[in-house]
Image (cartoon, rainbow, N blue to C red; front, side, top):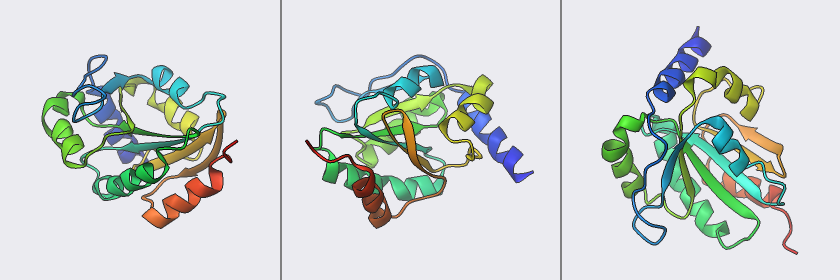
Length: 177
């Protein structure tokens, strides 16, 4: 029952997303671009065969553990952002109707820049894309996928502490050549 409730909540949120993209500023501005995408548009962004470690975090502004966790992710992103073989992608499951209000304010308040930002709009196929991210994922958030060369290296379906996140990144980050 709890699983169905979580899936329905995520489904409803994703269903309400509209549009194809929204920009809150330029790359040099206050907030980086955030794009509204479906899973087919999102997946190629982190499944490239380029020896880059992609840290893909699924979150929402209405998710208390996500809100607590995101500043940790931004700190770790700062630590590793100069590495050519590291990229952080934040995937929001918020309602796109809130993009100009609560979502934009949240992104500004939490200083979510220097990462790639997406809103996932794919309700009709969530039963396909959730297990495509990880076969054991129930759809609950926060959830984080660590992937390199299209191969899932680790999946965490709960909030991650800063030190644990750093350890995972250090363990999985390919050696610089």
